[in-house]
Image 1: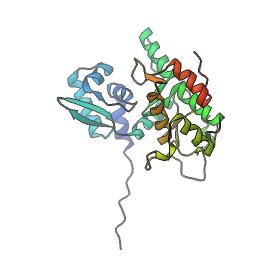
Image 2: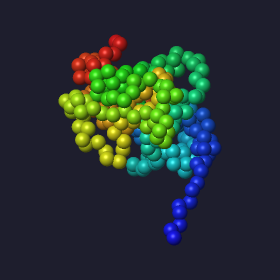
Image 3: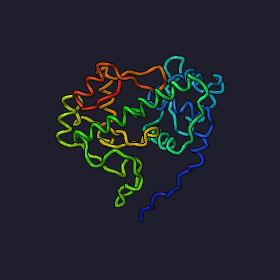
Image 4: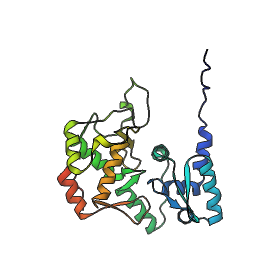
Length: 253
């Protein structure tokens, strides 16, 4: 008789303890766009010394929140995967707002609310607006993009980002192909369509393989660019026109 695999419970307290430190939380938020950053940049973002940042980063690496790679004499850190970013996004839904005490903090907050990345896909007003446009023009179908926890489908196991099923339509595949997104070449091991509940807008934004591919294409077209604030994204003038023409998304100037 085969030995059954050992069933274990997850150690939520240990994971929560890693996020609970304010300096580590700032580092994780800075890494939430999926890019790799050097320890010096993360130390500056967290407002701590290089030595203190090294201790924090070692704990995050040990806890498998963050991975590290060497390039010459430098070490670069990034989140271990989209699940970490999704967990941070979900936690932000129930977290109290940070106090804003300066014009700089206000500008950063406004930039993140307007447009940002959530690991490798778009979030904020831009992200939920894009999701809404995809639904309005039948690129996606299945739900309306509004966050209603009570509407989660109850006949299949609840899973963050999958309890409500969005589907890519055939006409949507063609529309995206015209934009340069080949949905037939998305990574096979990653769900094509998932969603995140956007913490600032409390609506759904597009995640999964399609969300990543579409975001990468918008960067390649120079329709969106990285902003000065970590994670923040700016839409170019060409991007505003292109998004309206190709996907029916009208953005306020």
